[in-house]
Amino acid sequence: MSNLDDLFLYTNPTRRDAKSIYRDEKYARGILLKNGDIIVWSGDIMHTKVMPFLTETGVHFSVFNDKLEICWQFESWADIQNRLVRAKQYLDNLGFPEDGRIVIDTRYYTHTDVDFPQIRYAQLFEEGFELKPLAEK
Image 1 (cartoon, rainbow, N blue to C red):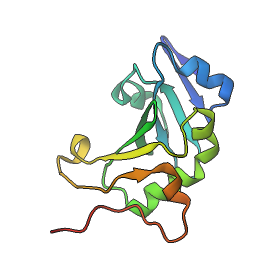
Image 2 (image 1 turned 30 degrees about the horizontal axis):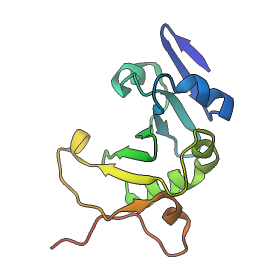
Image 3 (image 1 turned 180 degrees about the vertical axis):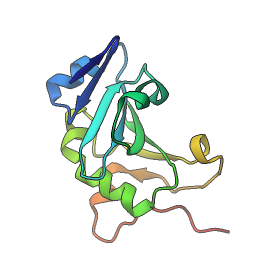
């Protein structure tokens, strides 16, 4: 845990940390690192405020109740799926349910629109499942 004025960063949060991360709402932001670790903070604080203080980069995400939103920055879909699978224990600690929705935001960073099917977190662990956009029409 690191304190940057009003900001607390949690690496690989525990269930106890989740109580500190979530303030008025069950809302957190963070980054998924390649090795399966995650860095998380309160959802009230934007990624742009935190990123200057981090030496590591990763896939940006936010958790709001039963929705986990990935902010895509041209990472491969397989890489994103792998990071989400490897971070399972930490997402569990944050209270993210296996039937929670995974939403991919392709617009914020890349200014592109990519459609995805409805994805539930548990699907990422099913044999043969691949996180990928809907087939082009």
